[in-house]
Image 1 (tube, helix red, strand yellow):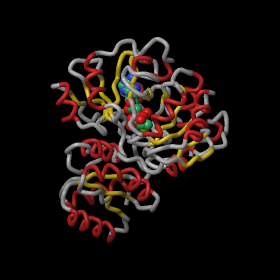
Image 2 (cartoon, protein in one colour):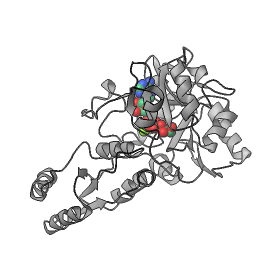
Image 3 (spheres, rainbow, N blue to C red):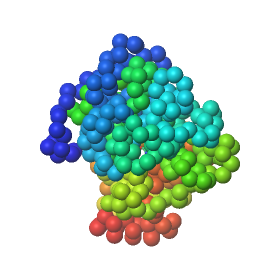
Length: 356
Ligand code: TXA
Ligand code: MG
């Protein structure tokens, strides 16, 4: 838990259940009023739950950083309804919409794609951590869309978890992380995709995929031709300002996680060997299907984290489609630690790291 003195205003968090496909207008209206008066509302998107505020209200934006314990150097995503339609749009928060952005929006919005574009002067610098750019996406979830439409404001929203922790895919996860630090959560059930949006920087040529997510690299290349993607950067966890969102410790449970190769049976034998040495290791068994693996990833990490194991062991999934995003999050959850394939070597590494 963060020290309570970091939270200037202790809030009473209200929970409203909503139908994810067709949310009740009275609940949406209540949430929208909170946004318009500078409050904090957690809401489901198709990826994960976000913690939203009026993106144009600098004071409200600062409270999001405070609620999450997020350093002011890590910029937020602004949520809109479209590229340039009626209601809050990307056009309202950017100084220029390149045709590539329009093409991508035509193909992938509403959906799990975030575009980094030139920031409009009216958007508070806090949103972008002082950068000249702004990250924008039009979420597909009916609850998120209804909220943006009713608030008539672009909504700045990071994932609704404490900084560096696993993203929430249910309202219960949000409350576990942030109860008492925000005003209202719209509980629309579990989020359909389970991992965050892809973040694409259009300010460079060729565009760079900064974070793999719900829209695959292959699908982006179909529209853009060339897209670079940053190799996973090994960045020390205190180097926040140089690489926003690139910290390895992001998405990390408190139980140490290690990636490894090999079959489930080999992992089983490693677990048995560790057990003989008094080290409680739990394998993380994700579904073979990448979409399903994405959906269950964060709740599985959360569940296993609560079991008090000494170490969690996980095998990477297929890199197809959303699998690249799943592997990226696993790699970060593991702080980049990959075990040697030889069992004795793996045991030696774990004994050394755990001091056993
Ligand atoms: O699916 C999602 O994207 C979820 C839902 C709530 O929309 N949001 C989310 O937000 O994952 P957050 O704050 O957890 O992650 C935002 C990512 C970070 O990696 C941040 O560094 C990057 O977007 N980002 C935001 N603004 C940026 C900018 N101007 N330039 C480069 N990266 C930026
Ligand atoms: Mg996040």
